[in-house]
Length: 407
Image (cartoon, rainbow, N blue to C red; front, side, top):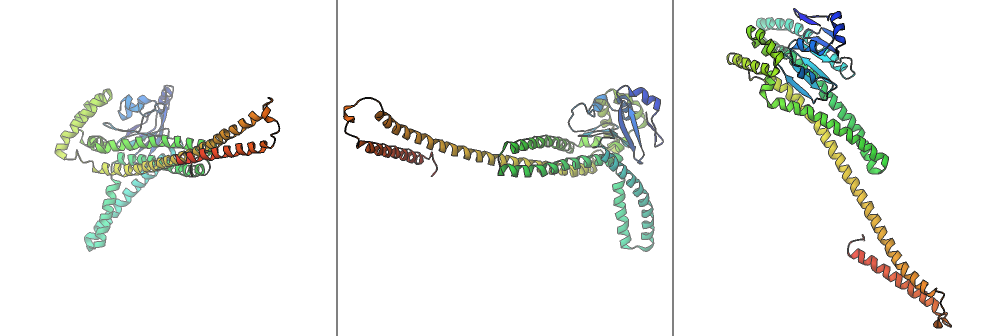
């Protein structure tokens, strides 16, 4: 297994890797704060021993198990499960699972680029600050002092803990990923809904149904990430657990060596012990509740993921409004069919009366009054037709009076 000695990444032992490869090994990429990286093909026990986390925490990163989006702060690591981003972050290195996955490759590239840029900027800023301070002391120029403060605050940003820089890359990646999926869905949904409103057909209805299912699944994924960030922002203790560098600097050598077995045996007990030890150290240092830096980081991406969630909410409202419009159109067509059925039924009743008269006179029965009265045929036909027409007009007028038929 790859280890760290003196700040350098030691490649994994090939024989050890072959032994563990048969025990369900997984591919990981390890990147340290200096930008060095190495591919690890080790099993879960080697990862647990390296970052000192419990098996149930590592189980969250198993792609075969459907765990929701989670950000867990442990004594010496941050367990990160955000959709396809499954990582373990320590104060000096980050472990990313399945680095050859298409969705993980951009994250690895971004993390590699940023770590190299930070290291290069730290060297340049150190040299620039020395020159700026010397220039300000010699000349006292106000522009030079402003230049010095610019580099000073820029250095504060670059000097943020490594775990926060890695966490920021992961949060930015998941927010960008979900935002891109939302934009793609919007691009497909709006034309489909417009086409459905213009022409209601089975093909258009099935297309909108599939897009609505995709939107429901995407909304659930975005909601899980938003809920996790909101839960972290509401609990200062959970945010304090993510300050790995602070805990590492505040831990005493005696307690650090004696509690290692407790961390592996029970992370809950270890977290309580570490929190108590941090509280005792905080009474001297006064930085236990100082989570402003992480809070600003999480708030920025919470607002971004909340904006994505608002887009999906607006899209759902548009779909619901379109469904209501389609239902109104279908109800209107249904009412028109009912009116047509009423007209046809009324006409059928009137014609049945007319046909009854014709049936009576058409019976093959000898009548005495049928002789020498042929001129009455036309009057019977006219009288029956007029009576049927009057009855039809009466039925329609009554239906309109009661509001059953539109005027």
